[in-house]
Image (cartoon, rainbow over all chains, first blue to last red):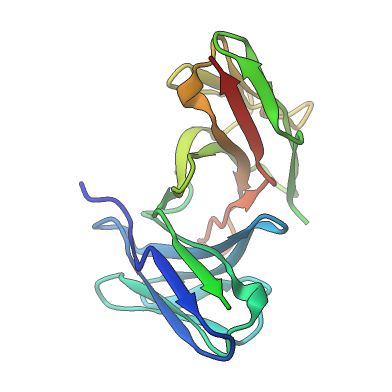
Length: 112
Length: 114
């Protein structure tokens, strides 16, 4: 069974640009969550999608947005990039969430 | 709010030593508890879980027991290997409107020397 696939693995962008990250969950998993991981802040929850609807949102500015498609694939977008957005962005999927999440390998975003 | 506190790392051990990584939690209800492991350059992997008090989760020689009276879920392994070197995250989930968003601890880095 294929795992959670995130693309691209690495990305370098310039301040002010925007970026779109992609996540393909495990087949049959309808819940997709996104996290930002940095050495200073640890793992911070961005948002969760379930059946194409945003079900929960973390405490991030409106520059961070996401969506989920009918096949459960999800994308997150960050507009007007700032240096502080440099991080590892992790996607996780679950059937119900209560039994735990399966994470992808992440997208390492560097903003210069 | 709900929170998870882990011991600060790094934890440095020799191969075959006994491992304990402490984790305590604060929650308004009855959470499920998890340990995740992150190897360098990878995402998190679910290591083990426990869903109710006194449950013991175990996997790959690692164990953790859900202790409601002390609100703890300490991770243990009897004999660590170099390949166990990684960052370990304790997490809790509580149901909220059908959602189970995990709350993670800050992570504890484990370094095992040959």
